[in-house]
Image (cartoon, rainbow, N blue to C red; front, side, top):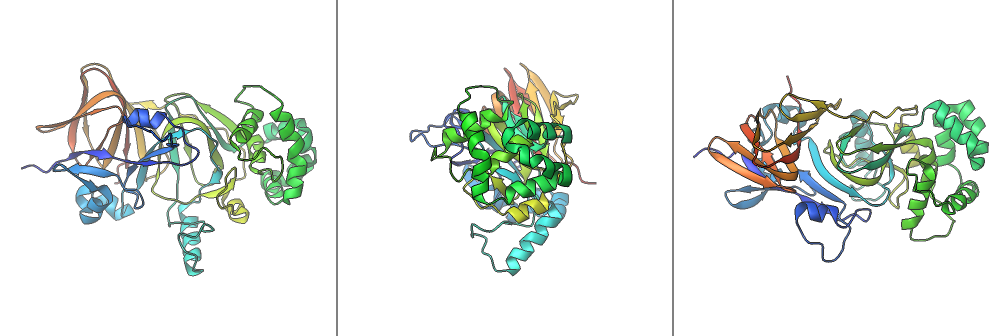
Length: 404
């Protein structure tokens, strides 16, 4: 009997507090009777939440199968280079703002991890910054209108913001003299009493404004307080500064943003498909109750103006749209098929494909796996297969780019 090459994959739901309630359950066709926030759906072999694949009628851990037979499940070249499935594929539903965050480069992650290991800081310690020795670049493709913070505003734009917001008047000379790093270091290291002194009148003014313009910082300040446990304007989160200092970006469905090491960012609202390197390394700078390490954050932040690159994707010849990412760990594409259309494909690496709309069938030799929205497939490396839709279907594919 031929070795199966295409498997049904079942991911892991993550119930983080910032998640929505309906989108992911509806996509996966599961109930949410307790009305829990359903923030993420993980597809991959992350040790803490590995997906399962269906092998001979039994659900088995994808991580276990990779560890037992890496050459078959991720391929020899990927094993040699990464030692694991190097990506984690997700669906996200963002209801509340996520933390302001930066991811370290791979070199810096290795240094940070080794230093914390040497210092005897437990992996489970909430004050731990580095959970592994990997970098965490990520790309997202919007499934709905999606809003996020991404990188510092260009110099002229940020200067205009500082001069036009009365409470930021004292920050103008800091920025003019010490540029991005001096400005951000200044506000991130301010005593909390001074943070409150600067931000209280600003937050009060924004809370009194009913504008629904999501391109303006005030909307997101109100959103922060809409979900805050306390409405008192004391101990104001200094992450509010970042909402004014960073680019507020809107991505329409099918548009993508790549976020590399050092780019400060935060998701704010919407649903997306996200693909990242298989890492947990996050350095946080506000809008979160989690651990914040300001010196470590400043050490790894790129202090420069950014023009966000909102990718529309590059259409390939076979109904597949690729979103180029400048990292070796992963690639992502969108597949859209109309009625009775097919694509011939050969995988280089292990691939995970999730159907987000309609139905799509995957055929290898004499075996066919048909998936409907919310269902996913795991495809072994070096598998020649056909993708087909009887009606129509949309899917997203995660893979490792070819290694020479």
